[in-house]
Image (cartoon, protein in one colour):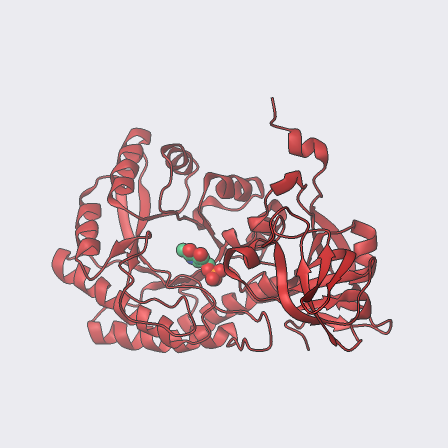
Length: 432
Ligand SMILES: Cc1ncc(COP(=O)(O)O)c(C=O)c1O
């Protein structure tokens, strides 16, 4: 009905998530609050796991890109579901280990891993490093020797496909801070160097072509290009690498214009290309990894806010002022992200007012959505911003010394706190 199956309207005209009344949740946990439907979260993982089973005979693994939303409880859920994990900082590794996530199922990303992080990740036996540059390759080799461990690596490759917008273009992606470029020969040189470093085992290659992609075609093209590179490595160095990580980027629905394919459909379409291309190039089927981030928690989450005031500026616009903003969701001020906003306690009322939903931070650009439609709202009403399960809590800040909002998981009619609301003492914890 809305942007996600986990949202409905109950007999009181209130928005529900996972069958629970959001107005009651706002009352119980306060606002702002991130609310996520755990059943939907788990279901999304299962769809990826099932697809890898069905279309690759289980020869592969979906990794949850933990940057989308990382906390101990979500890492626990990912471990329980049998997912792998994309981690890209010492903090994400620490959180996952704290949750009991198996280190061998973690893949350590990042374009500038610090020496301390590399040392930590090697010591903790993180399953694979996704190496971004030659400095890292050399540094990691040295750490592996120093610790007397063998480290498995993938190389991050820029396949020359840019799919950051709805259209994708085939060239021009050399200008990216991530990874080794294919078309300049840089990636081949990196593979040669990696194969020569003792204690490093070059297992495969990785690419990530963008986010919010609604079409299987750019993924198919990336798979073809990457398999071509595997064939080139085999031909030049006699090394047949067994792992092909095709990254994340599967789109989700923020509003009715967004029409994502079911995740299984992306995997199925790409699997046909992978199988045909591997056969054509005489390669054994690689172990296939995908790295969905946003598409796992994104549409399972809503953020609840309380309206503090409504400011009508005649002939200009009407601002609806809420008790959160860019400190809990910086995506509008960062890049004009679109969101659907509802009045949770009037969810069935006609949305006949054009308003701008504004936050409480000291920036004029601190908006959640401009010129969006709501019913007439007044102070005390609860607003729900939809599809905020990804890159919202993860991007929260303490701007204006505002404590971070809690993360509440609802499952089978029971809410539980995954991350508690911060208090003022938390804000001053590290102050001397
Ligand atoms: C390497 C890598 N993998 C996976 C993802 C997840 O992307 P998305 O959330 O669009 O699925 C990202 C996002 O930045 C990424 O950089």
